[in-house]
Picture 1 (tube, rainbow, N blue to C red):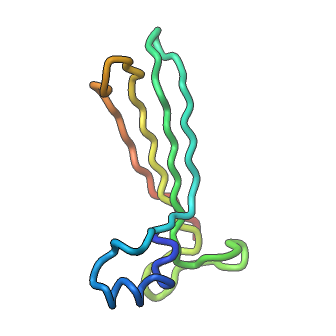
Picture 2: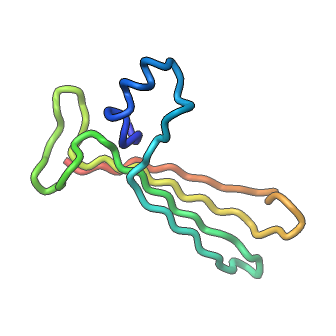
Amino acid sequence: MIFWNEFLTRGIRNTLKNTIWTIALVYGFFKQVKLSVSGKNCFLTLIARRSRHYAGTRYLKRGVNEKGRVANDVETEQIVFEDVHEGCPTQISSVKLLYFSL
């Protein structure tokens, strides 16, 4: 759903029977900020990925098509984890939301 150049690379992927020679492009947004919560330093990461279906200007497209795809489909993920200097963070929280407008 979010593999933006899927149509352009479909031929080479089907011919070679693998994805080693292609790069999946994702149309979206990424932001990471460091903040302090209750005296602990944490990172807040936001990732938003837009569907490749109904690509283009969203105000020109409305509704749901016969396959159930909506005009403005965005998957958003929020990740929070503690800043640990010694290695990997011990606690990670992730929430994924699916936003769409008809």
